[in-house]
Image (cartoon, rainbow, N blue to C red):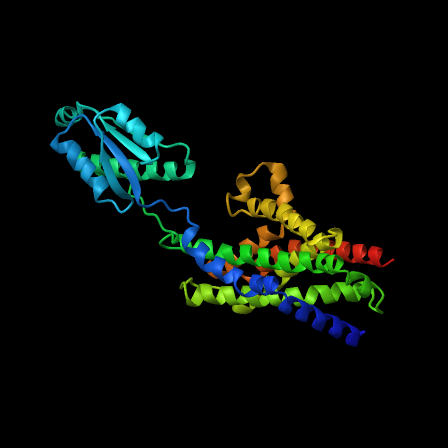
Amino acid sequence: MLIRLISLIKKEFITIWEDKRTRAIIMVMPFMMFFVFSAAITMEVRNVDMAVLDNSNSFESKSLIEKFDNSPYFRKIYYVNNFEELKEKIDTQKVLIGVYINNDFSKNIKANKPVSVEIVTDGRQTNSASIAGSYATQIINGYNTELTKSVSPVNISVRNWFNVNLEYRWYVLTVIVALLALVVTLLLTALSVARERELGTFDQLIITPLSSFEILLGKTIPPFVLALTVTSVMSFLAVIVFKIPFAGNPFYLFGAIAVSLLSIVGVGLSISSIAKTQQQAILGIITFQMPAVLLSGFVSPVEDMPQFLQILTYANPLRFFIKITRCIFLKGMILEDIIMNLIPLIIIACITLSFAAWMFKKRLD
């Protein structure tokens, strides 16, 4: 059995390596996407262009506009003469935000009367508009405090644990490691059996002395080893190249990655055991991958989802994979918490690998 298994594993490694497209998936795609996504994926909003309709045209209004000009978040300020121009700037997406200052702005300030400033944002870009609006509100509140010379009776002290300066790259890169591991692992496993069927070599595999368990094991080990290597290298690059702090235990991280990848391998082999062609396998990957990313907690917290979707996330290995990598990197997650998050992954791996084995046995019979 051991000789047969080693022969099949060797054959799988050779097949993967000799295929140029598969070799590119392993050696080029994950690292290229890792470096590109590290710069491209961000929820931060900077270099915002804005339009200002200043009907006051006073020293006070110009002082307020100067606050925007000196802010690191705002790039270019367009001065408009009326609401139509302001509307046109937002309609054509030349600016993300507009500020309207009324003509009684200076007079009311000098008379110690309430003053209003209207902020208009482009709601088509919901997240960016909300963040830019918050920046503008913060600047105006700061200007108001300077004018009134008032001090709040409550001193607010904000401290950010695990990411002191709220560096968004720290969050993104720890998530990207899991996302790219999902992509690579699914591609390697889901295409393996489908490729055999398409090339006509699956029938040759069936007539060999290999049992369904041995075929499953031979199809599992090569993509698992390759995905584990690629994911480990990406984790190393995140620490060395991008200076992401690593607060946890590297052995815990390696073990957690191995269990997480095993559950994803089970999903990929399940897809591969059902698909008859590589095209069907790719469609299966897309069908699983998009919901997995959306339900992982990366886009929005799992706790904010409807109750039935929260229950559904327990069948999503990416949810636990992302949580483990992020918490081990930034928080230094203890072993007990890691194990609690590994239990669902182990259950997913057992179910998916059992299903794939059953499908293989059915094909062999």
